[in-house]
Length: 240
Image (cartoon, rainbow, N blue to C red; front, side, top):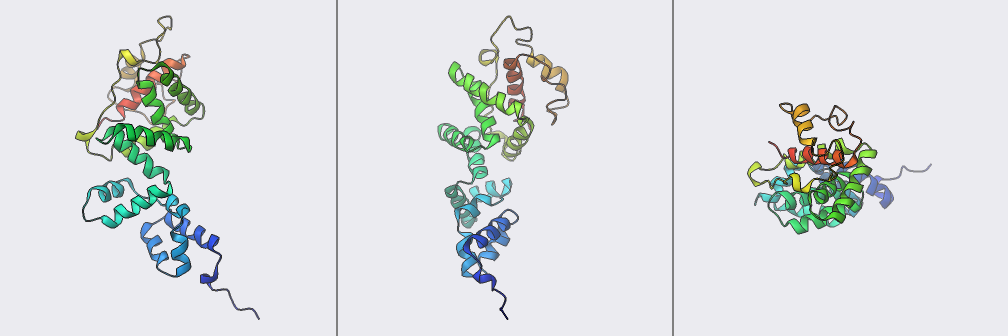
């Protein structure tokens, strides 16, 4: 009669999957699992496990600033080293809009976007379209069109808003949108320059509505004007 296999004898790949599943649910449980045996400890130190870890935004901010949470900062550093996209995205938002190094923030945001993080792609798109460089604007517009076609704009705004609104209001560097950096520059376009009026008519007093299809600029045939409307929504994500 064969004896049951001890959990400690499970293959390393199985332990890694167990540790990753635990990491998505609770960091405390992951730490407890790693202390249970050598196999669990080795599996729990895999990059894949750290990339799967779920860390609440407020915990990340608190660990980053509190001198009492060196272990938390060490854990965040290990997550960054593993390529944890959500942690890196939040770091990039902090650098771009909360007083960090903006160049480093944009560089990190591009890297995270290249790995398929839709909220990072959205942020890169907005920042490129807010700039003055025509080629950069076109790249941003191309990304915007892809996210729009995929129906991803709403979830991108939700993810970005959760990060930026978990920060201190007085530290925010709010992007500026004006008539100079509009995406639509065609005076022959019947909706050119009207996106601000449409926003205030449909949203004033209600704030940004979660549903992109609820009025807004979805009915506007000009993609450049729709991009301008999205830039207005993006800037208003910084509202308290």
